[in-house]
Length: 242
Image 1: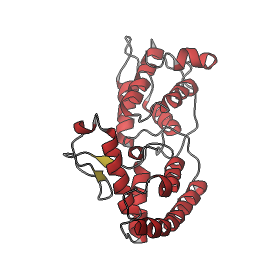
Image 2: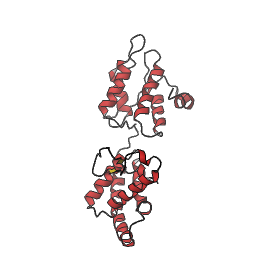
Image 3: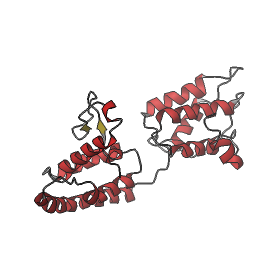
Image 4: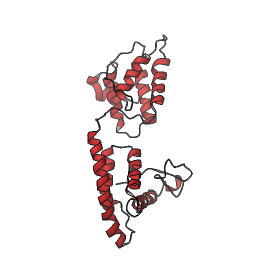
């Protein structure tokens, strides 16, 4: 369990987004050959805040919520990190009294927070659309520019603004109300290459995990007739970056 994957942090010289975000003792480069040093700093930071910081419940919840919202993976994995943290993160340098008294005491409070957040997850409608990690305005501007403003050699746009709007509402989180996925075909020349390049460049620049690649490939298959779903692995997945 690498704590740096779960605890949001910046390096010296970078501005913190919140008082809850950790600022490392050094700039990024000194940690290049000493990954363990940053890991230990983050373990101590988390332990001091969560177990030994004597935080009020509202402060503890605010701290955990900040890092949960910044976490780039599945929310259930962050909750699992917090569940395991008493045994795997609470730093070993604490004296015996602190470790025996504070850790069990705060573990109970962590359990309350985890219970609340798990309940929220169950009650929240499942949304399997893609997370764009950028503002809706940015995402809309990007695809309008690529699909509407850019044209083929005959001057034909790849899609209309209304088609782009429907595409975004069907495939990206936070575009509400959610629209139904519709498979459409472009009238422009060499549309397949342009659509693939447009989607790939957005994925390459803004995705935060290689796991998201398949989701973008599925979006190509499900939304555009130019991509043959019967040859998904060979044509779409393997050829995504071409």
